[in-house]
Amino acid sequence: MKFYFTILFISVTLFSCKKNNEEPALNIAYLGGEIINPNTNYIVLSKDETILDTVYLDGKNRFLYKIDNLNKGIYTFRHGGEYQLVLLEPEDSLLFRLNTLDFDESLVYSGKGDDKNNYFINEYIENEKEEKYIIKICQLNGEDFQKKADSLKDFKAERLNRFVEKNDPSDLFLKIAHANIDYKYYLSKEVYPFVHVGENKAALLKSLPKNFYNYRKEINYNDSFLTNHHGYNKFLRYNLSNLSLKTHDDHEKNACFDKKSLCFNLDRLKLIDSLIINPEVKDDLLYHFTIGYLAKSKNIEYNKELLKTYLSISKSEKGKERMLRFTSSVNNLKNGDKLPNIKIFGYDDSEYRLNAKVYAPTVLCFWSFKYFDHFKESHYKIKELKVKYPEINFISINMDGKNIEKSKNLLKGNGFYSPNEYLFKNPEVASNVLAIYPMTKTILVDKNNKIVNSNTNMFSVNFEEQLLGLINR
Image (cartoon, rainbow, N blue to C red; front, top):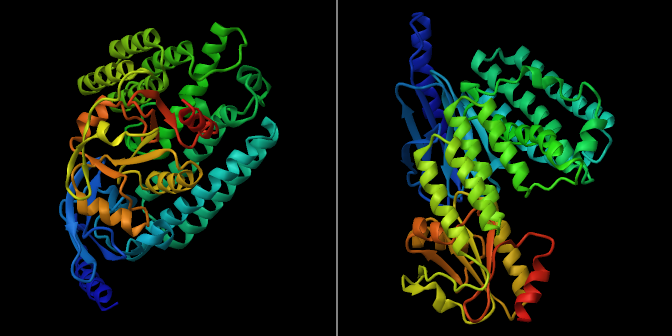
């Protein structure tokens, strides 16, 4: 703890001297900490998707970093495959301690700025638990669901009020804290019709209390402050999907809702074009929904039509180029075609062709450090399936490039290391050719290297049925 007290002493002395002289706030902040059981010897600090620096740990797995010319707001620090957010304001001298074996739950802040960040991390952990509760109450009728959702929002608002009375936080903190509460509540309302059991979504929407979506009158669809706010962006995705249900119902005349419907997806893209002006938010939404449809569609003509609409609306040249390549790959990965011959590395640094590793019915799945939960869940699932289906060859491939030691250490540290683990030689090329989106995408290949299913998911309810079909070919 000597490390912590030293930093705090220096920071407090510096800042208290400044305040006693009533000088303007110094536009700097310190971020430091200690990582128990580190996966790598560094953290990556970023803001608004822009990487600011790679900060290396010392011999005791500690670090201290000074941010000059601070742009106050939410920053992200990443370590291994995990990340967390931190609010930094002028003169903050913030320290944290975490254990990678229990990343979020072990994270504790100290120093100047600790109260607000401990508030946010506790809120984050509670929100993860809350998601299961929301799914459960979504099965209630609209009126009862609304009462419980309102009660949950009121509880959070009261807790925030108590925090404010005790800590007197900044306006920036309050703006973020209120946005967290509001958009979590709004999201639960937008999720309701999609999670509620029953296929006639139009009829369900008509049965809701008249004030169920009253908050929509106050929504700013082009809030530049919330452009990178996860809750706001997630809300927009569900809100726009929900609003598109009405237009879709007008076309389909009360037919059962099908999120794979071309009509519904076209309506959603057009709605985004009509409501969203902010180019960053607009292009992100257009890209998200278009690639999500294309990744699951096997109808080449429908794919062409949706792609045409996307290209006519999007202003992102980079997004258009990527979508054209992705659509071409999806359309070329037809069932019965040969698996593309991608170059891979083994953890002995040997180079192979992916086709050479397919000598039996094979399952191909993928992982990345960026999606740590998926990394763990997919490998646990593979372990389970290997026992049940020994006839099948399970191949898992890392998407992050040739960082053999980093990947090997993560696999070994979590008990997942096996001979059937590989890395792509060129992840970007492989991702384009195999149309790997989302990361949960799984490809089934028979013993003759022919694609049986170019896009399935090992977590789907009928996946084991697909495996039996693969074995019996």
